[in-house]
Length: 428
Image (cartoon, rainbow, N blue to C red; front, top):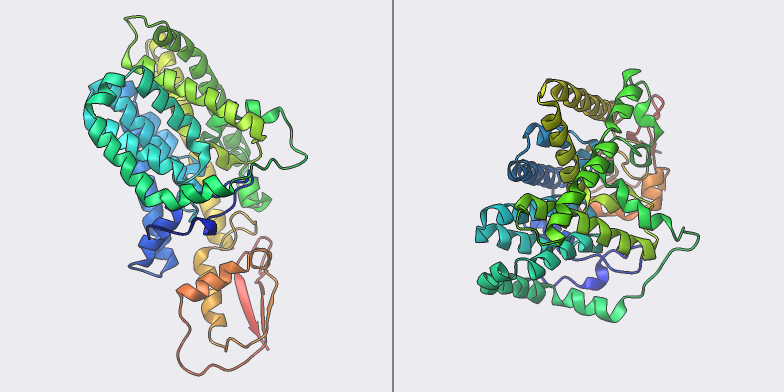
């Protein structure tokens, strides 16, 4: 650290190695603990805190109610990605903080939010290239509209960029010499151009079965289906906000003197969406919710604009508060159902979630009671497809030093009831 060999980075589906920031953070964790549960707790708490601060900061800058930030924080997707020890999910807090900081800079003209936005932008590029549209939108606006401000902060911004390039140069050098674009076969050439328009996805419960499996609804109350449909209101809210933002964008493009800092914020959001379409279209990107991790904050801003506009048109917030309360309740019902199902089943029997980490650790500790030469018959699909999972847990959790007997071990699901994801180790 910090010069992590870039060749060890995960290879993305489009031919590029992911950036090293996720690995660096894991190395920091390993500097003071080998407990995976503690690592997850620190990361989840930190990510949730950054998301909360960024959403509240953006609400204040846009002059909308902070209750909108509260509703957004009830998203099951933000909860899921905050708990995931994965590099891609770091795009969520960094993108939110970058847009919130730059928006504050446009409103207050303070230099430190601009420096924070520059830092977040550089870190985003060290996570995943899906962040390029947002980073490019802010960079273009800074260069074309805020050049004087950029010049006033030139030394501090240059120092931030230079420091990031210096510590990550091995990664960029490796990427320049080894990147080979790859577009998976059998993909649509058109869907990627329109996929970014679904960026409000993270404020709905759409597609949760792709992560949690169909079992997350097993035994759930009948109200859950209605709650899921209510959360879909986030899509038309964001689309309405995009339409309402067009006159604001036009004022900025036409250089009208009445263009406000908020107009510039929504111009940046629209530019980021356009850049995302231009990136995802040629690369045929459209097949996963994680591709919204760097774009979700733009659609939060669009939805906030639409909701605030409705409030102004009605002249009374009572009806709107009722709708927001219903939407928040729908998200809360979905989130509570997920949490309750995970607690009951000990995780999810799905590839993208799997058995709860605490139960996997308990299974590994039971396996470690026996010698490393013990034959192991693993029947857990997650471990069979990703054998490094139990191997890494064993590295983090040292085996007992006392002599251990040799036994035949069978590792399978407990199967005490349908959907039971807990692991049992049978000794023969």
